[in-house]
Image 1 (cartoon, rainbow, N blue to C red):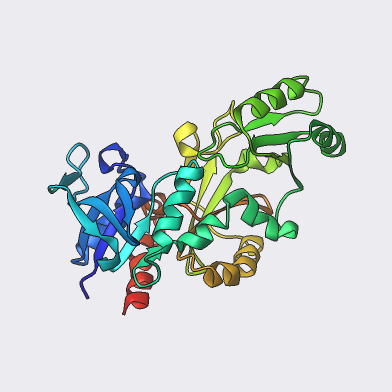
Image 2: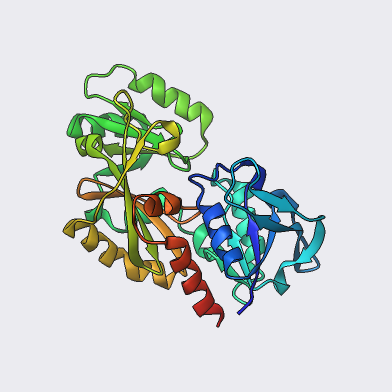
Length: 313
């Protein structure tokens, strides 16, 4: 089986190949003999109902500084592709949402991964609230009085943007911290949306585990330990990756959410777990594939394409 695969992504020249999941997926697809095409979201168009992109044929190589070559840009009818990977990084803003509306026009004749309608309707910090018993106590609001009451009840808290990503804008405030009012004023000026407040989980000092699921089944995990003076564990802000196994509680979490992931057409998902609690369900462009393999875990890129090829077969 030879598939024509279009990657809607941040420009390939900007990726850090050592830890980039999109790049890992491209390497495995190329290894299988599939034809790769590359375009950035700003080159997506729709005219008279036809969805196109100004795309280039792409070749990739696992060599830093020489990891890609691109052909000449050509207008490509995405309805004639076998697969489109929706892989640009958030922010999950109106631009991102618009791309899901356009790609919805070609799915499922062209398999868009993940399903664009369900990506749009499953924001990562809101989707997780469908499983309240699996997550820490959580408040979504812009009402400062509600935040005050929440902190009085739970003490140390985390405050973060509802549609943020990559650890940006995450603040840990201790029970007696006097900066809460100023922080909320700043958030209100920066974001039109509500923000999210959660009970601080001290277990984060032991790590924030990224668990990757394919078609609703867990296939690998990596633990991300925050730097000494940071409450965030994201690796690009100083978190340290380490090998890990799944606990019984984590398997329980995966078993609970798996049917919902499959029902929504989410082939590749990454969830975040701190201690016994799930904090996010990442469905836009989940990462961690290369780190899992680096620490001796499964070849998740291969498992991903096994699942996609089965759906296209």
